[in-house]
Image 1: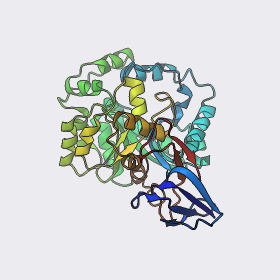
Image 2 (image 1 turned 90 degrees about the horizontal axis):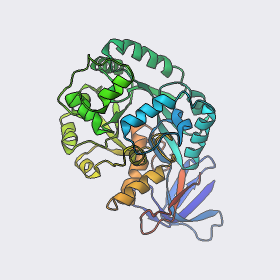
Image 3 (image 1 turned 60 degrees about the vertical axis):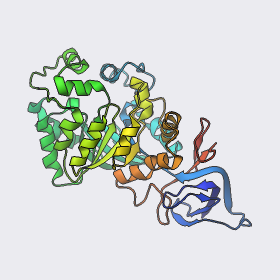
Image 4 (image 1 turned 45 degrees about the vertical axis):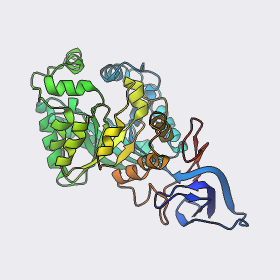
Length: 387
């Protein structure tokens, strides 16, 4: 048994506890949450700062970990994609070591669950061995409608290689067809299959869908891929794609850097189970731009946080993602950001019965946030995993 107290305990089940007490067994299962404690109890571990639940990284690409510091930042999404394609296979040395190091980095940074994008099964073994809860989204890339069957079959075969939780997902609007979405829709009728879709990470996506112009046309030309079959839809990507996504599935829309207020309002017409995901570190790395956070105040859908990959970020830390948002938007309270970093992600991954908040019976992990002043993060705030 272990007993923890700190200046504040954020349970996310009630108001923050000032000098409260968390009691766990030796494996981290919470046995008690109290608003006071016996100061004579010598078994209590005292900390300065705030105790919070373990973090949930809703969006990551573990298999790209070997590309850290390999891609020049600030050149935009299309240039980033070209660089990934060009060097991904060439920089294949020590891929497994990089994946393993990234997994350990996330655990050290207090991350207890990850929604991870995979194009291959290269991360399967490490995920099975890791203390982190992983859900793998096997990513389908296929703009050509004639290849929809082939793309689905390959994704299903890859998914079967994982012993951990797994589902199929389309990559992004600029790499999918209506035929592929129709097949996914039918596939989802018979099973639980959460979806994680890159959404409006670049305004070039919207140009491509509305007018078939912009950098993505040149992108496919440079790859030698004929896209005569693609016709512009005179709509933003979200307006075109969301109506085609499966019903009754949890759907994560990731990045949303160029999502408009009209796009946000448009979602009210549907009954989809939508979650938002922000990856501010990656957005700044790739395009020096952040989402219009105010727009999402008009949405009732939960917000989550992700790190994206080490190809597009300097580290894998949810606390750092929180700090970036706080630096740009001090009006968001710490507790609001904490919900994005914990319970909302746990709900998306269907892990909220065990993770995401501090309640008796749960085993969410405990993180200590230091250099925490007046209920706000600071530039010096750090995270330490307690259990």
